[in-house]
Every structure is written in C-alpha cells, then in structure tokens.
Length: 124
Image (cartoon, rainbow, N blue to C red; front, side, top):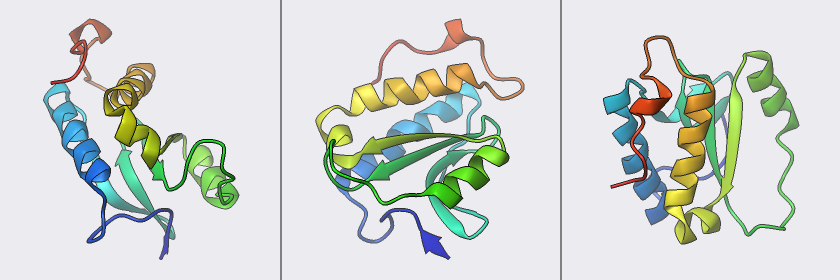
C-alpha cells in the first residue's frame, strides 16, 4: 500500500497533537480515523461520514509537493474533500489548522451532526 505521508511509529509531535484535537470532534458526532486505508493509499486522517480527508505534508510553504493526482482524483470521485496542511504550518499554528478543519466539517456535516451554532468557538 502506498503511503501518502509519514505517520506511525515515527509520527511527529504535531501529528500527535493534531490527532488529539481531531478526537475532540467525537463529542460533536464526528469520528476521525488516522492512518486509514483508502483503496491502495493510506490517508493521514479521515472522517468518512463527512467525506473529509486531512493530510499533513512534509516541507515548507512554497516548496513543490509531489503530485498526488491519481489519489486526489479517486478521492474526489468518491465525494471526499481533501484539506492539506504543511507540518511546519501546523507546528506554528495548530489552532488555525483546527479552525480550518472545523470549517470543512461545517461545510459538509454528516447526517445527524450538530448545527453550526453547536460548534465550540476555539480550541481547548
């Protein structure tokens, strides 16, 4: 299976901190999974009901990323939205990344999800 980014035994502190924040969405009816298989790929984080994928990329903003064209096309055809963040961006501003993910969930709530007004304003 092709990995789309590094995550696992060598996972970084920022990945662990983001995972802790994503698990907080459980209280709102969302259930993120990490290192989730999708066809022949491994996704960093995914909320299947909301059809939302979160990817953390190595490198810095402005650097070229390896193309994920085939994977992105398969995800789009399956109805998924992909949110990509640089690990360095998440290290410097995890709350901003979480806010962007929250917005992505608000844009695509799963059945039975809370109304937008029920989302907490900010992180813990």
